[in-house]
Length: 261
Length: 262
Image (cartoon, rainbow over all chains, first blue to last red):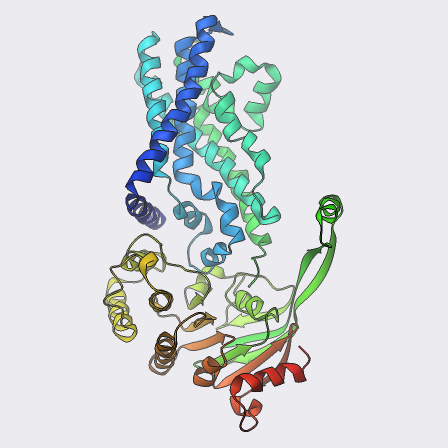
């Protein structure tokens, strides 16, 4: 409870900082909106040619893409501190984190709250609403709940990826760009339900990095293609991915060498 | 009470010659050199002492401070601060210490200083009455009234350093580590900072460990001097031990460094 209050205090300071530069804030937010909009155009033109991709219609793919984008934007909003962690290690700012009597993860999370990701979020919400209107899903309470679970699970998975990304900095001092395959890459290939990429990819995305649990399976449930209740709860199960991420992070902290002076 | 016994710490440093070709070679095969930052360091500091920890650049001062504040883990040796092992019991330990890194800010750049202080209040779980009391006292002694409502980025270096020091003392630590607190300050600010540290030590009995290259800091503040060079403790004494008559203090110290060949 205490840590949540502290985190909110961090968030509030971050927002106060952002408000100092309002032009920059609105331009960045608008930029974020446009960037995701081009991604949307990609899907749009694709469907001008083909009416279906592996049995998924345009509006269904839009639903999938928008949920994934929401998950990613939420994670980026909250866990941006980990995304920019290499700077913190190099400048020695992490020393400061270690001399404060609070958990390191909360402090790094609090170091940056990226409100401008709001633009990307807005794009996702617009797409999501459009997808809902276009598709003829029979909405029920459990399906709405599934969407919420997807958002929670997805934010957790992406946050875990950012955490792993950050933990690598303890060993290399640099951020490893290859990790972007798992974060930005996932956002891009997550436009389509993971199932369309074939069996092997689906296995990888189920058991290794659990993208399928936050996207493909619950989507099948929402679209009414699978009725089993387990498909509704799979996104929550995806939160297990935070455990190895946190362990790896803790291992990294023990390895921390600090920078000169 | 702070004790360090036989503490060693070494770093692996990548080495290569100048030039693009060498950089390319180093990409595949890197040569490392092991630097002993601390080599069998032993000392004891009692409660309420003011100690100047001096030595040339790269002597191991910062490494010592980092080990004592729980940031780094030593390779060998034992470290005890008021009965705690800093790097093992980090959270409980840092609640009792304050650290000022002269070259790094802990204030939020874009919000008024008082906002940063309020956050620190939550970070250190300082109770409301204690916070009010500390803030009032620090504001008066460091003359912060005018500064608290300005964003840190608009303060001069001297003004900011006064705020940094206040930020490190809000939770009333028993031990204060100052890593080059007067670096880059003008004469007036330097005097103000020194004067404040002295008062803090007298009224609250705060143990102060100070690293600096400014020998006037040492002269004004430290009743005891520990000299470190190439990772070893070379001398542990008072300012009078190193003073030899008329020269000024900088020359004295330079002479001292030369005599130890560091």
